[in-house]
Length: 374
Image (cartoon, rainbow, N blue to C red; front, top):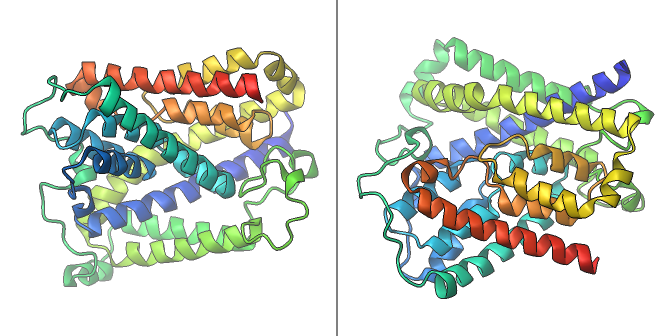
């Protein structure tokens, strides 16, 4: 075992997991502090519904997806809006993409948004013109800990928040200490890769295809500026965590973000990075992929069908290492939506199948078109 490689992968896994959790916390704070009201602004136009579905899909994680499914099953959004959400959504992988390659993330999300709008319009105005009948009754409710539309959420800044600060719970202390340690590690560069032999395969923060960026000396999205940006965001998150009320800390942050996501994100990230880096070092993965690109596209679609976050990180990592072309990552992102649509699968299998088949068709069309033309 190459221990330098192992340590570098471990550092990157901790860094990526930390960045992902910080972004998830910020999304959670924003959603709860706004009482979820931004999910309720439903318009009477299909075009606006599709636009809303696409925007909700771009929200990293599961919150936007769950909200879209809930609105769809209440007949407040069209199936085109549902399809648009499933295309623009990348599940928890969106956090990882933003952490590993922020510049490429902007391009990817913009393309996904455009494709989702077009596909949503085709779905509503050509494929399915009539409203879908296989939907649940109006009292359907999903993922209470994410949408929170059924309860009044206390403010993050009320008096009970300050009282809780005087006698902090063990969960609050653990989160505060974890964020503080992460901030220190980012600022001090402890989590940065330090070995030249892994420079081309382990870097994060926009080091994808680093030979294309060697002359970009004034680029604001270099590693140092990204570290500073995430350090600032982490400090803001630290403040919110310090002043949040105890209910929010225990129910929303500890039970939802930390216990449900942290371990799985780290294990998937570490395992994927380790396997991909070992493969890159000892196997000619790039040669095999270049000679079997048609199969790789099909594999990207098949893996995208899996209704879970984690397996898709293989394509994120291989693209970040310069092994996969951008359009393969795009194909996988089109088809996969994390576990956002799982409640839909439980409630309306027909709607899930219809939306997923459209996503698969779009992914295959774009993938093999790019393979032929590029």
